Length: 210
Image (cartoon, rainbow, N blue to C red; front, top):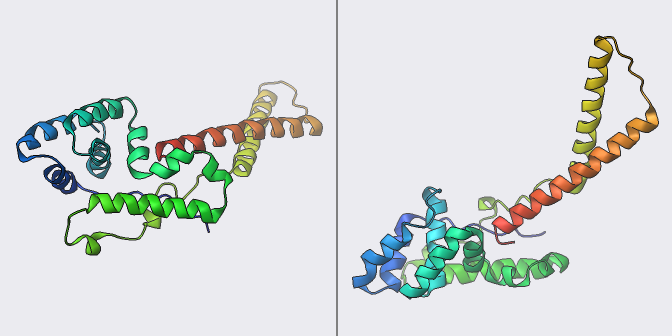
């Protein structure tokens, strides 16, 4: 079974802990202020997740943190992918073309490296670390398949055509049903639906670093 990319369950307490752990005490205020620029449009765990991503990528250097913050403000997905899913991000589309076993191995390795970083130096980390949470991932559900998109798109297009035909007949027009034309219409709608699904699923993968 293909394993999903997990999303870490983090809080603002984790952010504060990492700042104190990775930066000198006299930089705590300046680093915290810098982090306020990140994730302004998000709340709770999502904001903490993005702040932790730039902290991880900065490796305890304030100058690097400043650059990572600016980069995350431009595209937060790159920061999250690089911090949480570095191996997956590096391999890109080659992961999807590989075996299920190889993909699962990469997912687990990415999860483990993030957990090691998050709880480094924490004596209670063994109690806090968890296996990749299957139910805590938006990627556990890969989204609708192309077949679903084809059927929905075809039915939607055909339904719109029939509705217009019925409306036209009600106002005095003629409504002629041509089986061949309806099949062609269904196919065209199906292709459009499949394209929409493909674009949607790609956006989901990009947003999660996949």
